[in-house]
Image (tube, rainbow, N blue to C red):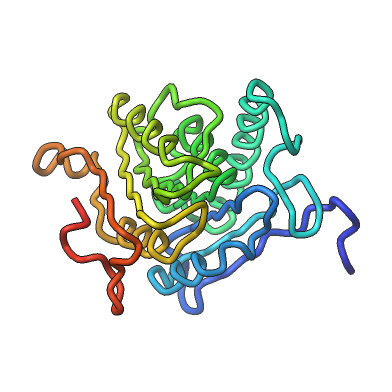
Length: 249
């Protein structure tokens, strides 16, 4: 039975083929889009984390393949703040339910967002304690800069240097604010990339997830690392994958 106009489809769900899940990934698509926008990212997560549950909810507003996370299509700046906050509260409640359903906790959860989905993910992880252990934010947009940094989450910002929809400066502002608040945050910027879930950014997100030690653990072991920002050309992606050892701090 097809969904009537504006009805919200059920989330897409991928379960690990064998054994009990050990991670939970929640993927939030961008504005005027739907989960199919993130197919390449899903494939990379499945390859890198075969024991993960992957959930792709549809934005609750809109129709067909043009879903969004906020109730108004083109709000002014003041309204946008409240709309993103409301969307973040709603997705946090959904995440808590999915964690309970699959027997996983916040430390085992990664919240991933692109564009408007990244704005919602950023707000949710900063506003809700212990919601996720990682947040992966592509082409980050924000309603307001964070007033608090999550203490139990590492945030990875990934951005195209040529992004004209969510200019790179937005990611730099978020990174600077979270660093000022002593949050755990990394920033990767790829030249030659626009407002896109580019293969270079997807690859680097998986690298960050698999190799980046959370700051709270790093500090306990050997003191705080230097500021974690990396810039590289998307053309530097090697045929076998990776950007070379110089790109990760």
